[in-house]
Length: 307
Length: 307
Image (cartoon, rainbow over all chains, first blue to last red; front, side, top):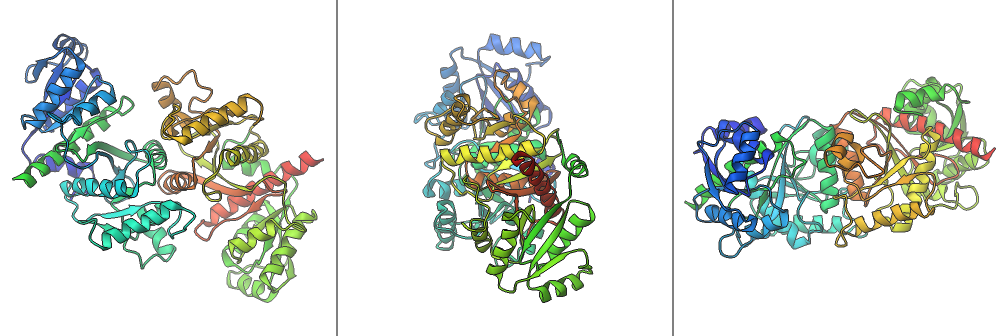
């Protein structure tokens, strides 16, 4: 079971090296990340995009392109479809966004012919290795689904449980979060949290233990949970998955802890046939590398499950 | 201008000592806090409640009641009305909850005869002195108004600006927060944030600079704001007031940062004729004392404004 990013990196040394296919790779920050991923034995890469531009950017950052497969496709949309098809066809293990608009990138992910549809809706998970918590936290959805419905939330949980399993966490504890830990009919979020808990008890959401609504301290701080006498709950400060009410709550917590707590993070898109790395320009170099590491571990797990 | 809680405590030494009236004071944690408030020259107190019980609890915590005014009212509701009337009549400067249900306590605050109505709706503000931010942050509303309307949000801003002013912060910067920093018609929160900004520009919300929607990093981290090129905004990582979309987002950020960042906090109820301290049992001793200090400073400011 991986309890932090060091564990995740250690796990990588035990699995076959993966390959990432990059859409529109002529981006200095993305190239720096895939270079580090290669050097740290996380993943090799196929760089799809304008070969001249890729060469130019690589020169600027002092990156030697020998050892990288470069596929010359000048048009960004065509490049993305070429890159995603490599993953679709099993020639690469995961897919990463380069210098391409997010909407166009996602369009390639969802392409019916060459994309990575799994039948489930896509969601985003951010993995936190945070000082003060002795295990990994999986925050979802802080970036992708603005106002998830009850059914969306059930699917987000299913997607995220798969990521937990890949990280060696079996039967993760899922906390549907709210401002309070009791159901209040005037707060629909708490009603939905209770309904997700009931769905889990009825076997409609499996492979995990759901207990909500929960406030953030009861979900993540054993001392707070004990202080508040929450000993009869299934989660007593030991949640693995933090399910947010909506994108605003999720994103504000993600940014707040990301900036003011001591956190290492990585994030991927889930609900796809293979891991998709969609980092933003504001993500640091380390976040990009951590995300590739996470993608490689998830790719390995998905591959083994298929066999 | 107070930039942290040390500044606030220093400011207290320059003002007249205040007096807090406690409703149903027979509570060990509340008595410990008012004892510390007296010792640290923050405020004297009037303890309203069951005098025998107050004596018993004081003995248990080794508190000498000489120097405290004790008013014997056994019935909790009557005790709260007696205690709030002292503030209403100007015999005490602020009002604090003791061993009383929050609903009953607020009923006394809103009592038409002896309460502390100001004509504005009540809201809650939590003051953060957080490592990594060089000034105080005023988080609102993380505890009181579940789903504020646009008009509620305008009033929350007005209430909180008053608290900022009391802390020596003139013309505070107000960030209506969201997951994103651009208006998206599919996210009503962003539309409301832009509307609050327009209301400020039209002079409908005064004494502050409103700029929203803003993500948390753009509101609180100058480097992130500059990295994202947000130099044309009125707020560039230097917000004073963080206005949350709803209670879930606010409370989750408050709990997250409260537990995993290095933070000193205090909080009060605003929109009242005098400061109201309503701390919860889960608040630490220091939070209670900080809240009393905040209350004393706000009481002093309100008093001076009336003169």
